[in-house]
Image (cartoon, rainbow, N blue to C red; front, top):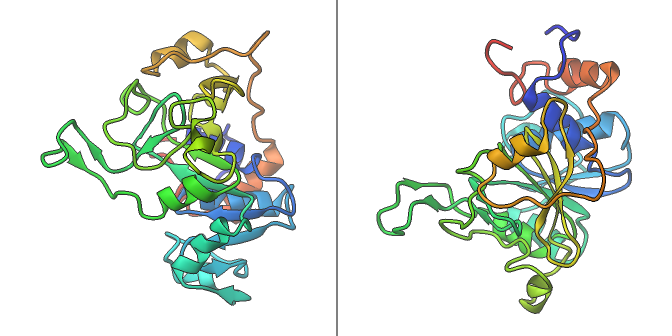
Length: 262
C-alpha cells in the first residue's frame, strides 16, 4: 500500500480517534476503527496504554489486525484473558479510562441508537444489532468517545430508539439518573470533532476537518449544532510518519481503513 497519498476519510477518523487517547490510560477497545486507533496510539504517542478488548483479551502481543474483538488475535499471548462479563465489570469498577462506541443514530445530547430504524418497535424499517455491550460502556465508563459517519439521518433531532445513554436530556440529568462517569466527551466523524457544552450538554463543534465549514457540518446534522467562541479550528491532519505507521504497521491490509478507488 502506498504511503504518499493524503489520508482518506476513514484514516482521518482513525487518526483523530487515536489522539483522544493519552499515555498510561486503560482503553476499552471495540471492533473496527477503535481497534485501529488504539493500536495506532500505542505505536505513536501512547506506548504505555493498556488495551482491554471487549471479548476479554488484554494487551495481546503485536500481530495482524484483528477482524473483530472476537478474533483470536485479540488474545494472542495476552497476560490476562477474562470472560466478557468481567471485561465490562472493569468499567463498573472504575478501571477503564476511555472507551469508544459507534452508532446508527446520535442526538444532540450524545444518546445513541443501535437497535432499530423506524417508529414501530414490532415492525421496524431495519432491525439492528442492539446494545451488545454498548449500554454497559455508555453507563459506566469514565470517558466515552462516539464515532460514526455524519449525515442528517444518522444525526436526527429525535432518536428512533435510545439504546445507550449519553447526557440524556442535558444538564445534570445523566448524574440524576445514577449513571457513572462523565458520559460522552467527544464525537468524531468524517466531518469534524465535537464536544458537549458544559452546562447544557448539547453537542458543540470543537474542530472541523480541512475543507469542511460550519454550514456544511450543519447541513449534515438534523439538529442545531452549537458553535464555539471565536474561529473554529481545523482538525490536525496526520503527519506523514503517522500515516506510514497506520498503513504499513497498524492496518496494512486496509481491513478497516481502505476505501475502494481511493
